Length: 464
Ligand SMILES: Cc1cc2nc3c(=O)[nH]c(=O)nc-3n(C[C@H](O)[C@H](O)[C@H](O)COP(=O)(O)OP(=O)(O)OC[C@H]3O[C@@H](n4cnc5c(N)ncnc54)[C@H](O)[C@@H]3O)c2cc1C
Image 1 (cartoon, rainbow, N blue to C red):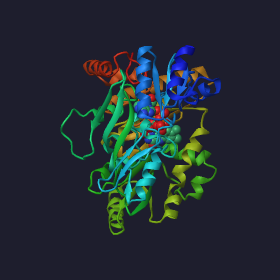
Image 2: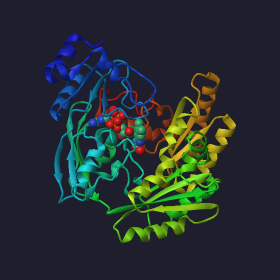
Image 3: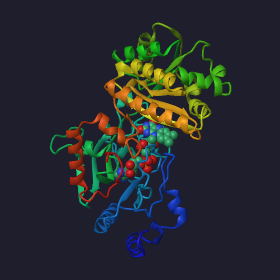
């Protein structure tokens, strides 16, 4: 339990309302989207950079572990406290510090909700390109810590590609400023890229300068149905090997289509998917009004090939909504397959997507488990969902073995454990399979430099 005197010190710093240890608050901050739970000792709600500095310095004096938190939407246990730790929630640091149209940048505090940044940018003809599916509620600090990405990453890149500079507080309470306000920068070591994706283990980010891009005038959508996974994956390779890069290239595999057919409450038929459909690509092109139709023609040409069953295009908002109906129904349909979804967010070089999909098929057969794969095919990043009855221990054992075999298969294909969700507490035991010993040693050395007492988000990212 947190000593009363220490809680009183935090309350003196932040005010009683912003340093809480009542049972209701603790219960609310014990987990993220991971189906696991650990009660924190207290939850702190700083409202300024200076308060974060003081929190970290106080925690150092007491060797108190701190777990940073945005919206708790992560699904690898990143924001889940460890026993004895105090949660630092950034939700009250929501200021847009500066909006600079001329230089196409915005300076934000970590608690700003991601979609808010894009909404603000659009008012000025600009766009914040990273678009995680959780954008309506996740916070930019969480996105930066996880290097979050969404469908648009295939054209625009992930969060890391949109950060110009950061202000952060290291584990021993030093304030650092990385990068700057320019799109070219060759002065210091690139600590910005190091901190993005470091999952709150090196420093707390208290301010970020983000790059904005011109907003496209329009977006058009293609829904493309194939008679096999293989044909769809080959089409992905063709698309990525020609000059017109789509702004989304999403894939649903055979079992995803089966789930929609079986559990989609008629969506398969109402969405007009042809009967023999075994895989679907959702493709989008964005740009100005004159150019988008030209892009669509180029993309249609690349998508055409063996076992193509249907291409439907949409140029209006209504068309887009109609074409995405099947994809949007997928999460709901998948939930009905089994009570627990083990979601692996693996990524392979895009030319090996078909190998990954075949490996997933073989694993599903071998381990006798339903596995549904879908995701950001243009980046080779698939969400592989192993569906399992968590009340059945024998099935859970098969699922664990299947997960380990999937990781081995992905690494064998030259891929990586995580494309966007990160490592957190849930995947760190797999890290030594992918990252060699000298590199891990250097990572541990960096952790020690930034956070000598190891108080920032212990038990995450790095393996024991
Ligand atoms: C329905 C759904 C859809 C999703 N879709 C996507 C998707 O398309 N793409 C994607 O990438 N992810 C996706 N996610 C995962 C999740 O939303 C992202 O990882 C997101 O970046 C987490 O943001 P958050 O604010 O919820 O952070 P949290 O989950 O609260 O924290 C995530 C990590 O960030 C650290 N952290 C938080 N704030 C700071 C800070 N200021 N300084 C340092 N460290 C900090 C935490 O300690 C933790 O390690 C999805 C999740 C859900 C539930």
